[in-house]
Image 1 (cartoon, helix red, strand yellow):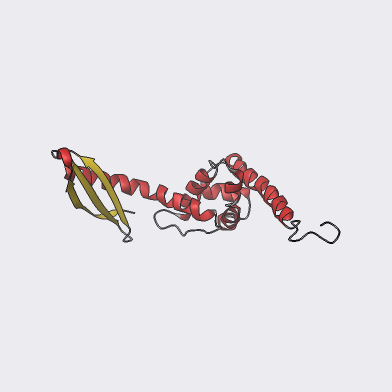
Image 2 (image 1 turned 30 degrees about the vertical axis):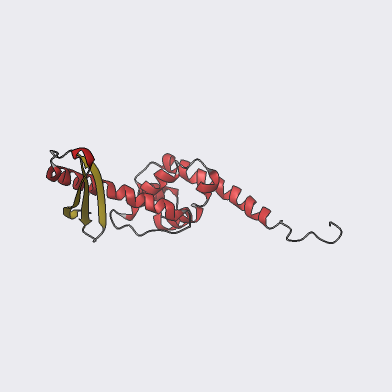
Length: 170
């Protein structure tokens, strides 16, 4: 996941002598990561370029997990590009377990079921895959299992909606 190329793409002069700097960093897969900031005219932009490349490189796995969280709400699984699939799954679960809205959390249920297939045949195998204790994994599985019941109830309720009232109920 290294950044293989970094450049200061543009520098704009701003009123008062400040500069607006646009950096472009390219990773080993051709992904383009842009970074923008304001600074004064004496600021060492080249040193900042190197520091920002390192910061972006360190942040890429977390950004990939954030993208997975958004896709998980649609039941879609990304194939890890910037880390192992287990690392991506672990980071994704960490973020999902911080979702407080149950309906939003519930949208990731299909992603979790796909994860279970990918991660192993039982809870111990899944805990090992993620590199966590069985007790820690149990908290995750319990939350997803509870939301399964809620979703099943809501889906059953949707089946009870009347498009038009039956005869005699008008």
